[in-house]
Image 1 (tube, rainbow, N blue to C red):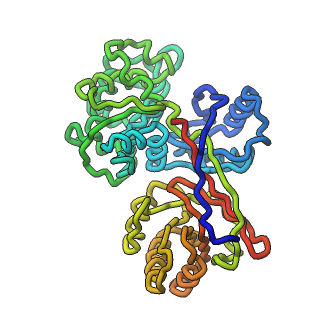
Image 2 (image 1 turned 180 degrees about the vertical axis):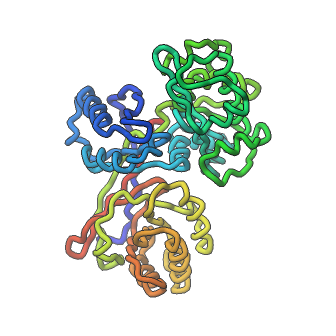
Image 3 (image 1 turned 30 degrees about the vertical axis):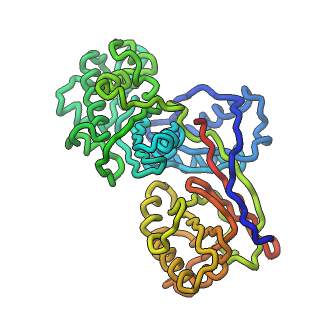
Length: 439
């Protein structure tokens, strides 16, 4: 293999040839996803799009939101990937989902273009996922139990479900909202106004209350100064609509409080209209596919252990976008690693062009420190050509036996995934996958 750098995947263009309707995830019960139901939905979409699944080279299966909390979420994502082919598979935790929605809605791009902080609130059925971007870079993500399907109705308007996560609020507010009964519109408005106020608080536009703190799913919230706000997700479709239109019919559109919640958010945020941006995508603010490139890497310039291979769909963390500080590798990686709901990761670095032994040892020690917390083999991807030396240094300094894989001459970015196959002679096959968004 030549010593020239293998460039990262660049998506030069995309064309959407089919969009399926938005469909509520089929469930067998409140804690179990109906895999056969999902498979039927996908099969129908393939048929309507006139695409043979054997023609699809790669894609993405990412389970998010309330569905990701179901007991068989990971099993369903794996089975669906096997049914479709060589797809990126992820069961996104709240932090990763927040990040994906921030990219998919266009909030990251808007933040970069405006050189300002943009807060994106992706409000779905069961959760609100918040991402904070400053000049295009994600500063933090977090999630709350606020969504449109926290209260659900049957076709007669009677409540069939109330999320346990908001029962304490209903009790504190003394609202007569009960399963099996038709609720009063004003009571529904009161709970939606309360949840809308919670969103004002997490945008640092009001003081954070104890009730809002109890709704947090994830930890690590840090106050910030809000420049702009955008709303995505299913409930986001109803934000900024005419907030004077409030009626019980609003709950019948999807048999939940989603439209009413969006309406109340519009009213509660009316004093901040001047800083609210319209996202490029709302309910479809997510991943729409994946692109990939494949290569074979010479075994003479890299370090790997055959026993650890093959590996598939390993998320890549790139701690530095531009200038690297070798002493900060551990700290930078740990800030990004909690976004992922994965047990294994790969760390991507540019690295010095002609590193000294001391620099290689410093990088190695930082990597070892990270993988004391992360399970699985130590996987490092370098742009510059010193993978074999780094792999040897890491192996020599490990306190316990771990598989080490170091490969070089590859450029990646955060959010990419890597497949590493079984050796073929003195080379190993590598596939880099990058997620594609609609925005």
